[in-house]
Length: 296
Image (tube, rainbow, N blue to C red):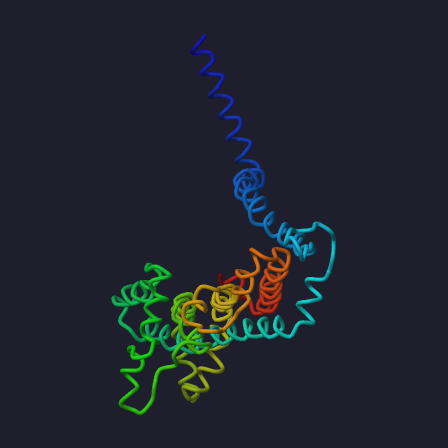
């Protein structure tokens, strides 16, 4: 009986394996069911709850959430000057960080991908990614020490009659640029590494100067990778609130308002939380035309 049962089990397994082999779509569906279910329940479910709760209100006397549909929170976001300023400031910081990361990352990636010796390139890439292994808070507090009064920035600039930026919006942009720079360097490095050397030689043979070669040959081919890196730098900067608390001084971003309202006015915090989601969706739709999503 045991032998017959084992034989029947083997036949069932073979039939199932044959069915999966003949139907790749069924095999793919079975493989993706668990992660997609996890994504739908935890990620999309939490976003749905966030969006729904943004239409609730709060009792001004008891601070209890009143589950009655209302657009008052979104109306306040549009009409209240403070909220408008914070939203625009947050988007501006995210854009500034993205631009600074691109400006710094491009020459760095060009050196690691095209100038450095092939044997040293993996070591240089590892060195660029090494800061990601350190704790987020350790890096931010290190920048707080650098930017503080009498810190390394003041000590370095004092001989020139200058002083460090201190704490505030510039310090926030500078610290976020340092934090997310590797996410911009890596895709640009990959794109430059795949750039055929023959294109650069052909451009030089046709009499193009380095600037013209960069504009007409290198930049169009690397631009999708720049956009791909900007997805990370923009979204991570837009949703950050810890950095601005540590080095931002009195500066307020969207994340800080969400953190401060989550105890007193949960629906308003939810409405504020939908703003980065909407901005990032619009940003993704914009960069999708560059082919950046295929470079992620």
